[in-house]
Length: 221
Length: 258
Ligand SMILES: Nc1ncnc2c1ncn2[C@@H]1O[C@H](COP(=O)(O)OP(=O)(O)OP(=O)(O)O)[C@@H](O)[C@H]1O
Ligand SMILES: [Mg+2]
Image (cartoon, rainbow over all chains, first blue to last red; front, side, top):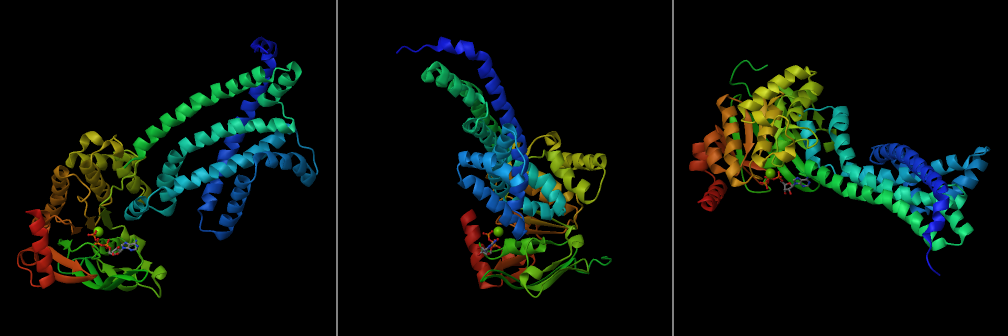
């Protein structure tokens, strides 16, 4: 059987629409997930035992279970719990945001812990109040240090988001499988879909390496 | 308020400090008069850094107390976590560490003005003006907008000293500030400290550099095993020590250096 990529030309618009859905979903979940991750990361390093316990449970739960199953839970169980219907898109946003929040909180936590004792000593020796120490010294450094890993988290989420096709959301992956079913050309179709993911993800992974180097040089004391 | 030069600036009594089961400071008594420059020497692990860290209010203590300029400063509590430290008094003390402690995400100028603006509510323009004057004085006039990662070790330590001076400290603590430097950069940092000495800045200095010790000290403490073994003028402690342990140490250190 010869490969024939020309069949795909007919589905340009559908593929583009799927890609836009994927991008929209990913971007929303990145923004919301990073915001949750930031505060959960802080909560996990806080002095309050309850805050630490609850946030720790959340993170371990979402890190320790398959994303696909998390998606099914949110899609099928959350509406039952809330007693209202949720659109596919809303469910997907909730599920991936919670997952992203758990992953990025670990990134923030690690970068918070990477700030050495000397920085805290210097703050005390300068008489900086606790609030200034946190907002002017600790957090800016932690966020800077977190950026490369956060970007990697984002790229992973972009690819992981393909899982939402399994619950019927019309993202790039979903459109791709539909086309492949209709044309009986799975190899060509899925190769092109993979290429589309790659074309977006690859420059970003290169950018991560570059940005990481710059940040490491800057923060090397 | 200190109105007579003979009133002590610092008075340490019965200071004890342990890390877990390890007794690091075992009853230190010490008074320091205004204008004095104490150099602390002694073997590694003898508690020199710990003494300075306690003086800076960075550590809890197990016993004893410290007064500063006549005011109670640090007082041991029922347990180490209950150590009472007067933060207002602590602000009149500045410290520079062995390892670079500049804030890497801020440039030199921002490092200098952060504390004056945030702690004392000084205007940014006024703080910037003072900072630039200090930087120029320390030969760093061109470096105001450089980031710490763009500076040499010697420049970083001079910036760290300038940063501490921005708060007009009444006492400066230096803990082996040249130990991490390449040999050719040691001089420029020591010159800055000597410059402060000429202006009668009270200071406590931990150093392994005997030339520097001799040149800057008005008094030398030999500290080993968590106690002050010998305390006297530099000619005595460095030149003709009375205690056997001091003599051994000085012989060894000078021997290594020559
Ligand atoms: N944070 C800490 N936790 C546990 N032990 C510590 C800590 N800091 C210092 N010590 C121990 O306390 C003792 C005294 O240490 P300190 O740093 O005061 O010695 P030092 O005289 O400054 O030595 P050096 O010349 O090597 O700097 C050492 O045995 C050291 O291992
Ligand atoms: Mg030391």
